[in-house]
Image 1 (cartoon, rainbow, N blue to C red):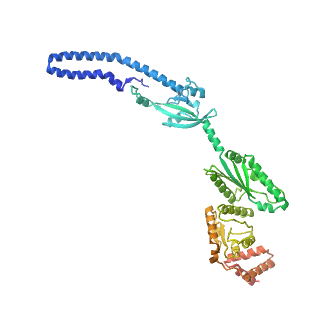
Image 2 (cartoon, rainbow, N blue to C red):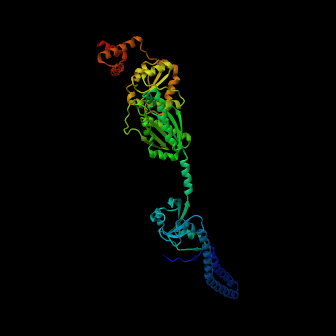
Image 3 (cartoon, one colour):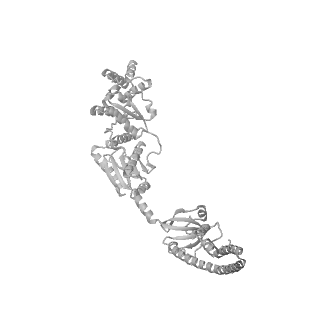
Length: 517
């Protein structure tokens, strides 16, 4: 490297050169005097020469003294600066171009155990602060590091030599392209701890539904039903209360759970073993009890966490139940459930979907819902409670939705929710169709529209079967049962299928069956 020479600059340099400038002014004045009086001009010339020699001697003798005084002042000034830096409360270090330590203050020494004689690379203390990293990142840079179980934010700032020159208005150094790197360590251990505690204290909302509550109870004796319910309640409460959670039973087959976010990791690690543990509850029930759980976390408010839980439970039920869905902010995770994503129309799954639809409709305040297990039960319920709207799938256990629709009162509307391929098979234009998967808003809007229509649906009145037509269909069923050994349900399905295949009404199909006897 070049040796740096100290040069005077600025006002100090002008002050030293000012006597020389005065000599030029005296020479100009001397020319004017010569023009007026030669003798006077000669005498003034001698004075000017003496003045210049004296000024030059003074400049030559005083410059080293002045420079020494400046150096002494700079030394004292630098000593004060170094003292301030050395006692600086923030750990501080100065690195060279190759990331080697040039100087550290007392706080840095106390923290790292490296004194001022330690001139190795900063990488030996912080492995991630490599030479390549420091040379790659220009200007100011902050990184997070860990040292002795403490969290630090490391602030890096380059200091170029030319910047030092521009700051000093008295002296200047030869230009250099090299730089130093100042390293500041800010202890953020306590701040990060508070942030983690705040995150861990956040509320997590959960909904736990029993998928097959009614089916499980129907499979055991009446005297054992209360015992089965009590055992399920015990397992659910015990599982969550061990995690300091609040559990409240909001319906006969539903629970609301509130817990801290810090315990969600334990549930994930445990993979929500409750859904498998509850299946071991046996008091004579032929069907194992299954649960669906929806978890909502990291929302902007408690209300949003609950909405996340509602969305999660809807997803769990829509996927067939017997599983857990966790929505953590925008991330959705699934636990349990079937590995194959194949839709199977089992009784349990139909029941689960019915509960999901009821949950959506009732939670929106649209209407109260009654769940029926068969077309026959739908007919009885509609007649008893004067129901104005029926929401169902394409097919019920004992009858198709189209056949059921023909037996409903004229002022009762039907909303069929099914996949588009099944809806395309529906041949009755009076049935309202809604393709699944359906959004919450579309379902609520459709149901509200049908309810508001109310008794005005008479304009959609469809011709009902007369007693004579009903007797004709029953006679055709009896004939099929007698000749082919069919049950009542099988005979009904046979007539229904023939009607759908031919595009004819069931009465016409019944006549064909009787006509072919």
